[in-house]
Each structure stands twice: as C-alpha cells, then as structure tokens.
Amino acid sequence: MSLLDVRNLTVTYPGGAAAVRGVDLRLDAGRKLGLAGESGCGKSTLALALLRLLPSGTRVTGEVLLDGEDVLTMKWGRVRAVRWAGASVVFQGAMHSLNAVHRIGDQIAEPILLHRKATPAGAKKKTGELLEQVGLPAARADAYPHELSGGQRQRVMIAMALACDPRLIIADEPTTALDVMIQAQILRLIEQLVADQDLGLIMISHDLAVLADTCDRLAVMYAGRVVEEGPARQVYEDARHPYARALSAAFPRIGDPASRFAPQGLAGDPPDPAALPSGCTFHPRCPVALETCPEEDPALRAAGPERRAACVLVGPRPDEGPSAETPAAQGDRPAEDPEALEEARPSTP
Ligand code: SF4
Image 1 (cartoon, protein in one colour):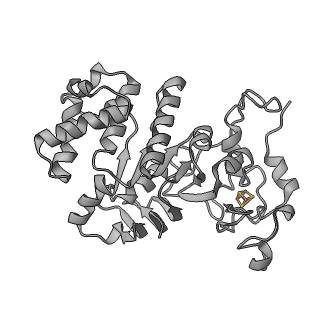
Image 2 (cartoon, rainbow, N blue to C red):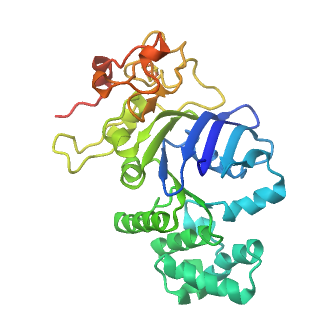
C-alpha cells in the first residue's frame, strides 16, 4: 500500500473555476515527488486539497488515501488528527507564515501540546530537539521571527512541520526568496530528513531544476492537470510534453555548453480556470499544435518506461521497448512524432 494514493482528484472553486482536474498521484514512504508548473496551474490548490485546507464552498471530489484512509471522507476530528501527525505542510514565505509576536519555540511547541497532549516541559524538550535537528541551537527557541535570517526562519518552518512526527511532508515553495547558498542548504536538509525518517515528500515549485535535483519523480501540471510525469531527471532533461519542454527550457543550463545561457520563454499566460480552452488546454500556446488539438483533450498515457504524458504527439519511442500502455495496446493512438516535437525544442546558437 502506498503512503499516499491520490485518485481522480478534482477541485472546483465557487464560481466554477476548475483548479485541479482529475489528478492521479502515488507516493511511497522515503520517496520524493516534485510538482511543477507556472503560477495558477493548480499545484498549491492540489496540496491544500490533500489535507482539506481549502475554503468552505470549494468542491473536492476523488480520493486522497493516506496510509489507506480517505482524507476526503474522514470525520473532522480524524482530519485534525491526520494534520500534523499524518501529514504536515511547510508553507512558502516563512516570515508571513510565522506569528511575528510569538517566540518561535512557543510556535513549534503549540502543535505538540495540542496534538501530542505533551506536558509543557515535554513540549519544550521536543522543541529544542527539533531545532537542533534542523541545524539551529535549541536556545534559539526564545527568538522572535524577526531576529532570525530568512534561512533560519525556513528551518523553523521545517521544524514545525516535523513537530508531530508526520509520515508525509508537503513543502510548498520551501526555498522561494532564499539566496542560492541557503536554498541549497535547505534542500539538503529536507533530503536528509526524508531519508533519515523514511518520510514521503511532495515538493512544489515552479523551478524544475530544483525539483530535478531533489526529487525522485516529477509531475508537471498545466491548467489543473498533470501533463507529464516520470523520473525527475528524465523529465527535466528530456521532457516529452511541449509544455514541460518549454518549462524546462526556461531555465539556463550553466554546465551544458550546448545550451543557451539566456533562457527561453513561452508566449502567453496560463488559462483562466473558469474559462478553460476547449480540447487540449495548452493548444493556444503550443508551438506544435495540430488542427485537431482544440477538439481533443488527450489523456495521460504511457510515454516510455515509467513515464506518462498527455499529448497526441507523444508516445513511447521505438527504442524504449514495450510498456504497460503502448500506443499499440491503445489501438488508435499515434507513436511519438519526433520531428514535430523537435520543432518545440528551443534552438541553441
Ligand atoms: Fe500541443 Fe496538441 Fe500536444 Fe496539446 S495535444 S500539447 S496542443 S500538440
């Protein structure tokens, strides 16, 4: 049984905005899944839906099985127990997420007191241990958020997320606004904690390079759907879906002499979730769209071993051998068209 098994998750905000559409994801303990996409593609909404943290009136359907229990149908008392102890969130922007007028030790201790029913002395001891675990002296528990650097505050957020020994951590842009040196330290810390404690990790970012470096698998979202999913390095270095390719090309490859340092952009904006384009929702921006793309919304399907993509042009390559769901097995689906997709790959000088 997987630690997390998300099935056909759909989130619709009041007013009809379809923020997440039919997402399937699986994650085992000790594994790290990256969720990538532009702002507004649905990745943060998906993360909040996993723990039922969305505003009332939001319609959420599907299944979110955490250790086999469906979070979406739990009674509220059980949901409160699952938050923190089953899964917890590292929110982006530590300065805004921490309470400016409370000492960080008190903020870390609060869920331990509430959810673990610890004594004040026990919660204080655990708080000190958590701070040391994330590389801060236990004595910093007496500090207020403004007395810490950005990197230290982010470490405090991670300590808070670990307060009740969760099985799953959801990290939403955990390194946004940090400089690259601190970013690397925080990422290594998260990796170490996942390995040491056999946690599952979902890391959300628009930065494909960070996710490729940190995660085992990578799911790229567009307009509320996963459009490509597979081993993180493979998706980053050899994306199949035209949108995932464009996202990958938006980052400079300093170590790659064949790549242009100036990153490539993608024209246009993500669609309004309340007024999605017909057919493949990426077609208004897709550089290789076919005439039929405004009518056909391709399902996520096999795009090679352990890889899936949602594009009519993408299938397993001839040298990748049979997979669980080959175009042949699907009957009328085309194999990958390398020439058409090559046109979508940004040129190098
Ligand atoms: Fe582009 Fe069509 Fe593939 Fe969508 S289905 S990504 S529009 S080629």
